[in-house]
Image (tube, rainbow, N blue to C red; front, side):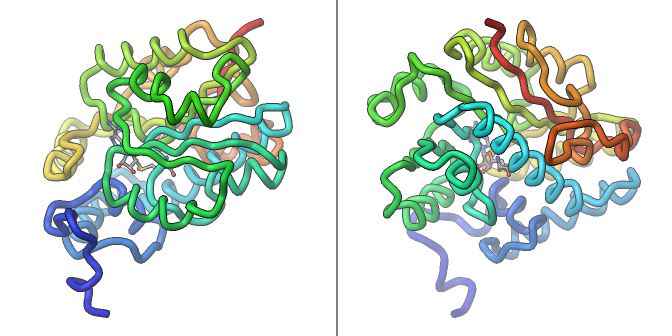
Amino acid sequence: MAEADRVPAGINPNVPSVARMYDYYLGGRDNFAADREAAEKMIEIGRRMGNDAREIALANRGFLGRAVRLLAEAGVRQFIDIGAGLPTQDNVHQVAQRYAPGSRVVYVDNDPIVMTHARALLARDPDVLALEGDLKDPDAILDDPRVTGHLDLSQPYAVLLVAVLHFIPDNAEAGRITARIRERLAPGGFLVLSHLYAGNATDDQTQAGQQVYSGTASGGLARRGYDEIVSFFDGLELLGPGVVPVAGWTADASPDGSYDFVKGGILAGVGRVKA
Ligand SMILES: C[S@@+](CC[C@H](N)C(=O)[O-])C[C@H]1O[C@@H](n2cnc3c(N)ncnc32)[C@H](O)[C@@H]1O
């Protein structure tokens, strides 16, 4: 099928989408020429920083899978994945259900193309719900009757903000959103978060990346420093290796030491609400 023929109604393939660019980094096929062009620019910027954007995206997926497995093994049965992205391999519900059958998952994303794919793929699984929503308003997500009908939010649940918070460029807003999510988590709840890390990026490299993402529907991108990323876990108990580059998260969440803080990439952590 020609590429133009597989554009779903209501989708503009000429405006790059964060979700489809990420799909391209991961080697997927749900992307269009404008997405590939923008993604290639990011790959080139990463190369100049000594990074491989594709490797980092795959390592980020690795972290996501390991974190979900860790939580499923710790007894968590409810997951809210905000900024879920296009379905790919080892989606959250597949990992959670592998280690904890019966786990319930809510996928949230603000990109309509993600919803089109997610609904088609997930329609047959009653334990999974996908809905359009915006990270900028966590209360609207957590109070949505479809969410409260699917999950019991008085019981422990995990909120996943994996490679999404850097699309909220305003620092105060990112702080407000994460503070609200931490406040809403029930005792025994978890925050799983990964975030684009500034590392030793020069101002030019940072600006070049911002420019690429300012052309997407998300409209912006912020690399943040270590302290800022750690602050998103304020008051939570950090598990495993703490906040480290995604490559540092191993299957049993022990630090393997094979990561490099200098080059940038993505930092990730898992925080638990203290008892
Ligand atoms: C880089 S992808 C990450 C996908 C997945 N979480 C992962 O790490 O493998 C970021 C996703 O966040 C979504 N996103 C960006 N800004 C958002 C917002 N304000 N609210 C909800 N989703 C958002 C994008 O549409 C995209 O699907």
